[in-house]
Length: 460
Image: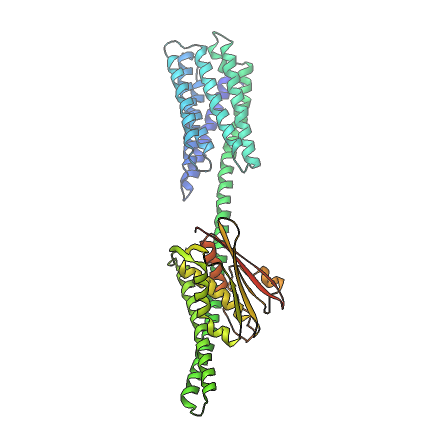
Protein backbone atom coordinates (compact mmCIF):
# COMPACT_ATOMS: atom_id res chain seq x y z
CA UNK A 1 0.00 0.00 0.00
CA UNK A 2 1.46 3.38 -1.06
CA UNK A 3 2.05 6.27 1.34
CA UNK A 4 -0.51 8.43 -0.49
CA UNK A 5 -3.23 5.84 0.06
CA UNK A 6 -2.39 5.61 3.78
CA UNK A 7 -2.52 9.41 4.10
CA UNK A 8 -5.87 9.60 2.33
CA UNK A 9 -7.23 6.84 4.57
CA UNK A 10 -6.17 8.79 7.68
CA UNK A 11 -7.76 11.90 6.18
CA UNK A 12 -11.12 10.20 5.61
CA UNK A 13 -10.97 8.65 9.08
CA UNK A 14 -10.34 12.08 10.62
CA UNK A 15 -13.33 13.52 8.73
CA UNK A 16 -15.47 10.62 9.94
CA UNK A 17 -14.41 11.21 13.55
CA UNK A 18 -15.07 14.94 13.13
CA UNK A 19 -18.58 14.22 11.89
CA UNK A 20 -19.20 11.77 14.73
CA UNK A 21 -18.17 14.32 17.35
CA UNK A 22 -20.33 16.99 15.71
CA UNK A 23 -23.26 14.60 15.94
CA UNK A 24 -22.63 14.03 19.66
CA UNK A 25 -22.26 17.77 20.19
CA UNK A 26 -25.57 18.74 18.56
CA UNK A 27 -27.48 15.76 19.98
CA UNK A 28 -26.75 16.75 23.60
CA UNK A 29 -29.25 18.92 25.43
CA UNK A 30 -26.44 20.54 27.42
CA UNK A 31 -23.81 21.55 24.89
CA UNK A 32 -20.21 20.58 25.59
CA UNK A 33 -17.74 22.89 23.81
CA UNK A 34 -15.00 20.28 24.21
CA UNK A 35 -16.78 18.00 21.74
CA UNK A 36 -17.02 20.83 19.19
CA UNK A 37 -13.33 21.76 19.59
CA UNK A 38 -12.29 18.10 19.22
CA UNK A 39 -14.42 17.83 16.06
CA UNK A 40 -12.80 20.93 14.55
CA UNK A 41 -9.36 19.59 15.51
CA UNK A 42 -9.93 16.36 13.60
CA UNK A 43 -11.34 18.35 10.67
CA UNK A 44 -8.14 20.43 10.36
CA UNK A 45 -5.97 17.35 10.80
CA UNK A 46 -7.99 15.55 8.13
CA UNK A 47 -7.45 18.35 5.61
CA UNK A 48 -3.73 18.49 6.39
CA UNK A 49 -3.19 14.73 6.05
CA UNK A 50 -5.32 14.68 2.88
CA UNK A 51 -3.20 17.35 1.23
CA UNK A 52 -0.03 15.50 2.26
CA UNK A 53 -1.19 12.37 0.43
CA UNK A 54 -2.64 14.13 -2.64
CA UNK A 55 0.38 14.53 -5.00
CA UNK A 56 4.13 15.09 -5.08
CA UNK A 57 4.20 18.51 -6.82
CA UNK A 58 5.56 21.44 -4.84
CA UNK A 59 6.36 19.09 -1.98
CA UNK A 60 8.15 21.71 0.11
CA UNK A 61 5.44 24.36 -0.08
CA UNK A 62 2.75 21.75 0.36
CA UNK A 63 4.42 20.47 3.53
CA UNK A 64 4.35 23.96 5.05
CA UNK A 65 0.59 24.26 4.46
CA UNK A 66 0.16 20.75 5.87
CA UNK A 67 2.20 21.80 8.91
CA UNK A 68 -0.09 24.78 9.50
CA UNK A 69 -3.23 22.63 9.36
CA UNK A 70 -1.96 19.70 11.44
CA UNK A 71 -0.39 21.97 14.04
CA UNK A 72 -3.66 23.91 14.33
CA UNK A 73 -5.55 20.63 14.71
CA UNK A 74 -3.11 19.33 17.31
CA UNK A 75 -3.36 22.58 19.28
CA UNK A 76 -7.16 22.39 19.31
CA UNK A 77 -7.17 18.67 20.16
CA UNK A 78 -4.79 18.96 23.13
CA UNK A 79 -6.71 22.04 24.37
CA UNK A 80 -9.92 19.99 24.34
CA UNK A 81 -8.33 16.92 25.93
CA UNK A 82 -6.73 18.69 28.92
CA UNK A 83 -10.07 20.42 29.53
CA UNK A 84 -12.15 17.25 29.19
CA UNK A 85 -13.61 17.96 32.65
CA UNK A 86 -14.82 21.38 31.37
CA UNK A 87 -12.45 23.26 33.68
CA UNK A 88 -10.50 26.05 31.99
CA UNK A 89 -6.87 26.11 33.09
CA UNK A 90 -5.36 29.46 32.23
CA UNK A 91 -1.65 28.60 32.70
CA UNK A 92 -1.89 25.36 30.72
CA UNK A 93 -3.73 27.07 27.90
CA UNK A 94 -1.19 29.88 27.85
CA UNK A 95 1.66 27.36 27.47
CA UNK A 96 -0.12 25.51 24.65
CA UNK A 97 -0.78 28.79 22.84
CA UNK A 98 2.88 29.82 23.20
CA UNK A 99 4.11 26.50 21.73
CA UNK A 100 1.57 26.73 18.91
CA UNK A 101 2.60 30.30 18.02
CA UNK A 102 6.30 29.43 18.10
CA UNK A 103 5.71 26.46 15.80
CA UNK A 104 3.51 28.57 13.55
CA UNK A 105 6.20 31.26 13.35
CA UNK A 106 8.84 28.66 12.54
CA UNK A 107 6.72 27.35 9.67
CA UNK A 108 6.30 30.88 8.31
CA UNK A 109 10.08 31.19 7.90
CA UNK A 110 9.96 28.09 5.75
CA UNK A 111 7.74 29.79 3.14
CA UNK A 112 10.76 31.50 1.57
CA UNK A 113 12.86 28.37 1.22
CA UNK A 114 11.30 25.05 2.24
CA UNK A 115 13.87 22.68 3.77
CA UNK A 116 14.24 20.10 6.48
CA UNK A 117 14.05 22.90 9.01
CA UNK A 118 10.28 23.01 8.34
CA UNK A 119 9.86 19.27 9.07
CA UNK A 120 11.94 19.61 12.21
CA UNK A 121 9.95 22.59 13.54
CA UNK A 122 6.66 20.85 12.72
CA UNK A 123 7.64 17.61 14.48
CA UNK A 124 9.11 19.41 17.47
CA UNK A 125 6.01 21.62 17.98
CA UNK A 126 3.56 18.74 17.61
CA UNK A 127 5.69 16.59 19.95
CA UNK A 128 5.81 19.24 22.67
CA UNK A 129 2.02 19.79 22.41
CA UNK A 130 1.34 16.06 22.83
CA UNK A 131 3.93 15.71 25.60
CA UNK A 132 2.42 18.59 27.58
CA UNK A 133 -1.07 17.13 27.10
CA UNK A 134 0.02 13.72 28.40
CA UNK A 135 1.76 15.25 31.44
CA UNK A 136 -1.39 17.22 32.31
CA UNK A 137 -3.51 14.08 32.09
CA UNK A 138 -1.06 12.04 34.20
CA UNK A 139 -1.29 14.71 36.91
CA UNK A 140 -5.09 14.54 37.20
CA UNK A 141 -6.59 13.01 40.33
CA UNK A 142 -8.35 10.73 40.84
CA UNK A 143 -6.59 8.90 37.99
CA UNK A 144 -8.74 6.23 36.35
CA UNK A 145 -7.48 3.44 34.08
CA UNK A 146 -9.11 5.16 31.12
CA UNK A 147 -7.37 8.46 31.84
CA UNK A 148 -4.04 6.66 32.18
CA UNK A 149 -4.57 4.94 28.81
CA UNK A 150 -5.37 8.21 27.01
CA UNK A 151 -2.39 9.96 28.63
CA UNK A 152 -0.10 7.09 27.61
CA UNK A 153 -1.27 7.26 23.99
CA UNK A 154 -0.42 10.96 23.82
CA UNK A 155 2.96 10.29 25.45
CA UNK A 156 3.77 7.70 22.79
CA UNK A 157 2.49 10.04 20.07
CA UNK A 158 4.74 12.83 21.39
CA UNK A 159 7.75 10.50 21.25
CA UNK A 160 6.92 9.68 17.62
CA UNK A 161 6.70 13.37 16.69
CA UNK A 162 9.92 14.22 18.50
CA UNK A 163 11.66 11.31 16.80
CA UNK A 164 10.47 12.59 13.42
CA UNK A 165 11.95 16.01 14.28
CA UNK A 166 15.24 14.35 15.24
CA UNK A 167 15.19 12.31 12.02
CA UNK A 168 14.58 15.46 9.95
CA UNK A 169 17.54 17.25 11.53
CA UNK A 170 19.89 14.41 10.49
CA UNK A 171 18.68 13.91 6.91
CA UNK A 172 19.44 17.15 5.11
CA UNK A 173 17.83 17.49 1.72
CA UNK A 174 15.09 14.95 2.22
CA UNK A 175 12.09 17.12 2.94
CA UNK A 176 9.77 14.32 1.80
CA UNK A 177 10.83 12.07 4.69
CA UNK A 178 7.33 12.44 6.17
CA UNK A 179 5.77 11.02 3.04
CA UNK A 180 8.37 8.37 2.20
CA UNK A 181 9.21 5.02 3.71
CA UNK A 182 11.64 5.58 6.59
CA UNK A 183 11.86 4.61 10.27
CA UNK A 184 10.50 7.94 11.51
CA UNK A 185 7.54 7.79 9.14
CA UNK A 186 6.78 4.17 10.03
CA UNK A 187 6.93 4.83 13.78
CA UNK A 188 4.79 7.96 13.42
CA UNK A 189 2.24 6.07 11.31
CA UNK A 190 1.89 3.32 13.93
CA UNK A 191 1.59 5.84 16.76
CA UNK A 192 -0.93 7.90 14.73
CA UNK A 193 -3.19 4.88 14.29
CA UNK A 194 -2.92 4.02 17.98
CA UNK A 195 -3.54 7.57 19.14
CA UNK A 196 -6.40 8.06 16.68
CA UNK A 197 -8.24 5.06 18.09
CA UNK A 198 -7.42 5.63 21.77
CA UNK A 199 -7.97 9.41 21.81
CA UNK A 200 -11.20 9.25 19.81
CA UNK A 201 -12.82 6.53 21.90
CA UNK A 202 -11.06 7.65 25.09
CA UNK A 203 -12.26 11.25 24.92
CA UNK A 204 -15.86 10.13 24.49
CA UNK A 205 -15.50 7.64 27.34
CA UNK A 206 -13.97 10.35 29.56
CA UNK A 207 -16.97 12.53 28.83
CA UNK A 208 -19.27 9.63 29.68
CA UNK A 209 -17.32 8.94 32.87
CA UNK A 210 -17.50 12.63 33.77
CA UNK A 211 -21.29 12.69 33.19
CA UNK A 212 -21.73 9.56 35.31
CA UNK A 213 -19.67 11.06 38.14
CA UNK A 214 -21.73 14.23 38.02
CA UNK A 215 -24.96 12.25 38.06
CA UNK A 216 -23.69 10.25 41.05
CA UNK A 217 -22.60 13.43 42.81
CA UNK A 218 -25.96 15.09 42.12
CA UNK A 219 -27.70 11.96 43.40
CA UNK A 220 -25.59 12.06 46.57
CA UNK A 221 -26.41 15.75 47.05
CA UNK A 222 -30.13 15.06 46.56
CA UNK A 223 -29.93 12.12 48.95
CA UNK A 224 -28.14 14.25 51.54
CA UNK A 225 -30.68 17.07 51.09
CA UNK A 226 -33.50 14.55 51.54
CA UNK A 227 -31.85 13.22 54.67
CA UNK A 228 -31.50 16.75 56.07
CA UNK A 229 -35.08 17.56 55.11
CA UNK A 230 -36.39 14.41 56.81
CA UNK A 231 -34.29 15.23 59.85
CA UNK A 232 -35.71 18.76 59.95
CA UNK A 233 -39.26 17.46 59.60
CA UNK A 234 -38.71 14.92 62.39
CA UNK A 235 -37.08 17.57 64.57
CA UNK A 236 -39.93 20.00 63.92
CA UNK A 237 -42.56 17.38 64.74
CA UNK A 238 -40.73 16.31 67.90
CA UNK A 239 -40.12 19.92 68.86
CA UNK A 240 -43.75 20.94 68.60
CA UNK A 241 -44.93 17.79 70.39
CA UNK A 242 -42.51 18.52 73.24
CA UNK A 243 -43.50 22.18 73.41
CA UNK A 244 -47.22 21.34 73.32
CA UNK A 245 -46.79 18.77 76.12
CA UNK A 246 -44.48 20.81 78.34
CA UNK A 247 -46.37 24.07 77.99
CA UNK A 248 -49.76 22.50 78.46
CA UNK A 249 -48.76 21.03 81.83
CA UNK A 250 -47.45 24.22 83.47
CA UNK A 251 -50.20 26.42 82.06
CA UNK A 252 -52.85 23.93 83.17
CA UNK A 253 -51.21 23.78 86.60
CA UNK A 254 -51.19 27.56 86.87
CA UNK A 255 -54.86 27.66 85.98
CA UNK A 256 -55.73 25.10 88.66
CA UNK A 257 -53.63 26.83 91.30
CA UNK A 258 -55.21 30.16 90.44
CA UNK A 259 -58.71 28.71 90.76
CA UNK A 260 -57.75 27.12 94.08
CA UNK A 261 -56.60 30.48 95.44
CA UNK A 262 -59.73 32.34 94.32
CA UNK A 263 -62.34 29.71 95.20
CA UNK A 264 -61.00 28.28 98.48
CA UNK A 265 -61.61 30.84 101.23
CA UNK A 266 -60.68 28.55 104.10
CA UNK A 267 -57.01 28.20 103.13
CA UNK A 268 -54.63 29.13 105.95
CA UNK A 269 -51.57 31.33 105.47
CA UNK A 270 -49.09 28.46 105.07
CA UNK A 271 -51.25 26.76 102.40
CA UNK A 272 -51.62 30.02 100.49
CA UNK A 273 -47.85 30.55 100.69
CA UNK A 274 -47.23 27.04 99.39
CA UNK A 275 -49.59 27.60 96.44
CA UNK A 276 -48.05 30.97 95.63
CA UNK A 277 -44.57 29.38 95.73
CA UNK A 278 -45.78 26.65 93.37
CA UNK A 279 -47.17 29.31 91.02
CA UNK A 280 -43.85 31.17 91.12
CA UNK A 281 -41.84 28.03 90.38
CA UNK A 282 -44.16 26.98 87.56
CA UNK A 283 -43.94 30.48 86.08
CA UNK A 284 -40.13 30.41 86.24
CA UNK A 285 -40.01 27.02 84.54
CA UNK A 286 -42.38 28.22 81.84
CA UNK A 287 -40.29 31.37 81.41
CA UNK A 288 -37.11 29.30 80.88
CA UNK A 289 -38.93 27.07 78.40
CA UNK A 290 -40.32 30.02 76.43
CA UNK A 291 -36.97 31.83 76.57
CA UNK A 292 -35.23 28.75 75.15
CA UNK A 293 -37.87 28.49 72.45
CA UNK A 294 -37.40 32.14 71.45
CA UNK A 295 -33.61 31.87 71.41
CA UNK A 296 -33.76 28.63 69.40
CA UNK A 297 -36.11 30.21 66.84
CA UNK A 298 -33.87 33.27 66.49
CA UNK A 299 -30.78 31.08 66.21
CA UNK A 300 -32.32 28.85 63.52
CA UNK A 301 -33.53 31.85 61.49
CA UNK A 302 -30.15 33.61 61.67
CA UNK A 303 -31.62 36.50 63.64
CA UNK A 304 -29.47 35.97 66.73
CA UNK A 305 -26.32 38.07 66.64
CA UNK A 306 -23.44 38.18 69.11
CA UNK A 307 -22.76 41.44 70.95
CA UNK A 308 -19.73 40.70 73.18
CA UNK A 309 -18.95 43.02 76.10
CA UNK A 310 -16.76 42.85 79.21
CA UNK A 311 -18.71 40.92 81.86
CA UNK A 312 -18.06 39.96 85.47
CA UNK A 313 -18.44 36.19 85.65
CA UNK A 314 -19.66 36.13 89.25
CA UNK A 315 -22.41 38.69 88.56
CA UNK A 316 -23.68 36.62 85.63
CA UNK A 317 -23.85 33.47 87.78
CA UNK A 318 -25.55 35.26 90.69
CA UNK A 319 -28.19 36.68 88.34
CA UNK A 320 -28.96 33.22 86.99
CA UNK A 321 -29.23 31.85 90.54
CA UNK A 322 -31.61 34.65 91.58
CA UNK A 323 -33.96 33.77 88.73
CA UNK A 324 -34.11 30.18 90.01
CA UNK A 325 -34.26 31.00 93.72
CA UNK A 326 -37.82 29.68 94.02
CA UNK A 327 -36.84 26.31 92.55
CA UNK A 328 -33.84 26.13 94.90
CA UNK A 329 -35.97 26.89 97.96
CA UNK A 330 -38.62 24.37 97.01
CA UNK A 331 -36.01 21.58 97.05
CA UNK A 332 -34.07 23.22 99.91
CA UNK A 333 -30.88 23.17 97.86
CA UNK A 334 -27.67 24.88 98.92
CA UNK A 335 -25.54 26.62 96.26
CA UNK A 336 -21.84 26.88 97.01
CA UNK A 337 -20.01 29.27 94.70
CA UNK A 338 -16.24 29.58 94.50
CA UNK A 339 -15.69 32.18 91.79
CA UNK A 340 -13.10 34.98 92.16
CA UNK A 341 -14.64 38.45 92.10
CA UNK A 342 -12.18 39.74 89.50
CA UNK A 343 -12.84 37.09 86.82
CA UNK A 344 -13.88 38.83 83.60
CA UNK A 345 -15.02 37.35 80.30
CA UNK A 346 -15.78 39.05 77.01
CA UNK A 347 -19.05 37.53 75.88
CA UNK A 348 -22.64 38.14 74.85
CA UNK A 349 -24.62 38.75 78.06
CA UNK A 350 -27.89 37.26 76.74
CA UNK A 351 -26.22 34.07 75.52
CA UNK A 352 -24.13 33.65 78.68
CA UNK A 353 -27.23 34.19 80.82
CA UNK A 354 -29.04 31.46 78.89
CA UNK A 355 -26.07 29.07 79.25
CA UNK A 356 -25.76 29.47 83.03
CA UNK A 357 -29.51 29.57 83.62
CA UNK A 358 -30.04 26.30 81.75
CA UNK A 359 -27.12 24.51 83.41
CA UNK A 360 -28.13 25.59 86.93
CA UNK A 361 -31.76 24.73 86.16
CA UNK A 362 -30.63 21.23 85.11
CA UNK A 363 -28.62 20.90 88.32
CA UNK A 364 -31.71 21.85 90.37
CA UNK A 365 -33.93 19.54 88.34
CA UNK A 366 -31.80 16.43 88.92
CA UNK A 367 -30.74 17.18 92.50
CA UNK A 368 -32.33 15.41 95.45
CA UNK A 369 -34.11 17.58 98.06
CA UNK A 370 -31.78 19.10 100.68
CA UNK A 371 -28.80 18.52 98.40
CA UNK A 372 -26.18 20.94 97.18
CA UNK A 373 -24.89 22.47 93.95
CA UNK A 374 -21.32 23.67 93.51
CA UNK A 375 -20.10 26.33 91.09
CA UNK A 376 -16.34 26.70 90.70
CA UNK A 377 -14.14 28.74 88.37
CA UNK A 378 -10.39 28.94 87.81
CA UNK A 379 -7.89 29.95 85.13
CA UNK A 380 -6.78 27.17 82.81
CA UNK A 381 -4.11 29.46 81.34
CA UNK A 382 -3.78 33.09 80.32
CA UNK A 383 -6.39 32.64 77.59
CA UNK A 384 -9.13 30.40 79.04
CA UNK A 385 -11.31 30.22 82.17
CA UNK A 386 -12.95 26.96 83.24
CA UNK A 387 -16.32 26.98 85.00
CA UNK A 388 -17.65 23.85 86.70
CA UNK A 389 -21.34 23.43 87.65
CA UNK A 390 -21.74 20.26 89.75
CA UNK A 391 -24.73 18.56 91.32
CA UNK A 392 -24.97 15.41 93.45
CA UNK A 393 -28.19 14.13 91.99
CA UNK A 394 -29.32 11.25 89.80
CA UNK A 395 -26.43 11.39 87.32
CA UNK A 396 -26.42 9.85 83.84
CA UNK A 397 -25.55 6.57 82.19
CA UNK A 398 -22.48 6.37 79.94
CA UNK A 399 -24.73 6.08 76.85
CA UNK A 400 -26.70 9.20 77.77
CA UNK A 401 -23.47 11.05 78.47
CA UNK A 402 -22.01 9.99 75.12
CA UNK A 403 -25.00 11.38 73.18
CA UNK A 404 -25.47 14.44 75.36
CA UNK A 405 -24.31 17.10 72.91
CA UNK A 406 -25.54 15.65 69.61
CA UNK A 407 -27.47 18.02 67.35
CA UNK A 408 -30.65 15.96 67.58
CA UNK A 409 -33.50 17.22 69.73
CA UNK A 410 -34.25 14.62 72.42
CA UNK A 411 -36.82 14.32 75.15
CA UNK A 412 -35.22 15.25 78.48
CA UNK A 413 -35.31 12.83 81.40
CA UNK A 414 -37.74 13.76 84.24
CA UNK A 415 -36.25 15.38 87.33
CA UNK A 416 -36.31 14.14 90.93
CA UNK A 417 -39.69 15.89 91.45
CA UNK A 418 -40.94 14.67 88.06
CA UNK A 419 -39.97 17.96 86.37
CA UNK A 420 -40.25 17.69 82.58
CA UNK A 421 -38.07 19.27 79.88
CA UNK A 422 -37.62 19.48 76.12
CA UNK A 423 -33.87 18.89 75.88
CA UNK A 424 -33.69 22.20 74.01
CA UNK A 425 -31.50 23.82 76.66
CA UNK A 426 -28.44 21.65 75.94
CA UNK A 427 -28.72 22.36 72.20
CA UNK A 428 -28.64 26.10 72.92
CA UNK A 429 -25.78 25.74 75.42
CA UNK A 430 -23.58 23.86 72.94
CA UNK A 431 -24.40 26.26 70.09
CA UNK A 432 -23.74 29.42 72.14
CA UNK A 433 -20.48 28.13 73.62
CA UNK A 434 -19.24 27.19 70.13
CA UNK A 435 -20.09 30.71 68.93
CA UNK A 436 -17.85 32.09 71.69
CA UNK A 437 -14.95 29.84 70.70
CA UNK A 438 -15.27 27.77 73.85
CA UNK A 439 -16.05 24.16 74.66
CA UNK A 440 -18.21 22.13 77.03
CA UNK A 441 -17.74 18.63 78.45
CA UNK A 442 -19.55 16.61 81.08
CA UNK A 443 -18.66 13.94 83.60
CA UNK A 444 -21.33 11.86 85.29
CA UNK A 445 -22.06 8.60 87.08
CA UNK A 446 -25.47 7.19 87.91
CA UNK A 447 -26.66 8.17 91.42
CA UNK A 448 -23.49 10.21 92.04
CA UNK A 449 -24.27 13.41 90.18
CA UNK A 450 -23.05 15.35 87.15
CA UNK A 451 -20.39 17.98 86.47
CA UNK A 452 -20.44 20.29 83.46
CA UNK A 453 -17.10 21.90 82.51
CA UNK A 454 -17.20 25.04 80.38
CA UNK A 455 -14.01 26.47 78.90
CA UNK A 456 -14.42 30.07 77.76
CA UNK A 457 -11.80 32.36 76.24
CA UNK A 458 -11.00 35.49 78.22
CA UNK A 459 -11.22 37.42 74.91
CA UNK A 460 -14.13 36.22 72.68
